[in-house]
Image 1 (cartoon, helix red, strand yellow):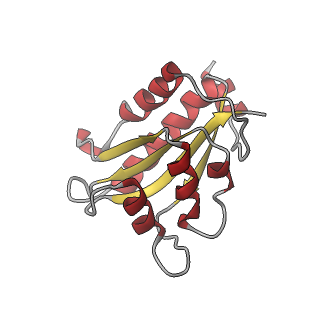
Image 2 (tube, helix red, strand yellow):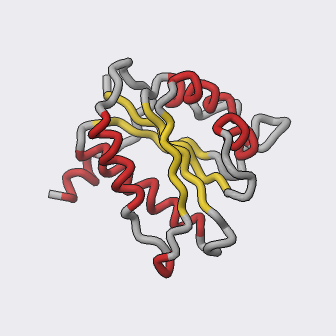
Length: 151
């Protein structure tokens, strides 16, 4: 039952080094892409990250609360285009939790790493994520979701 998934889901901040299978990553992405959005505007942009080096560099976007990115084998950068929809934060949040619930259903751990309104002290975390991942400057970053096998 769905409520069992909701009851069992909790943030996982440490993962094993066993990578996810392509089919698992595809299902996680599909869940996020199928998430409802305000007025069906589909303003959310999801960027899968499979490159372990890039995932580790993304962990440097802020000084704390990025531990899950230090061991994740898969991550998704959650962003949106604020020019498409004014409630992009809500839309991106819904997509994020949809991915996390799909991961839980697959027995995969996940953790939301906040990017919006965070910094490394000198620079907004959002700018660091955009630069490291080569993303469009007009997008707004909400989070990075870390995924991996539970220990």
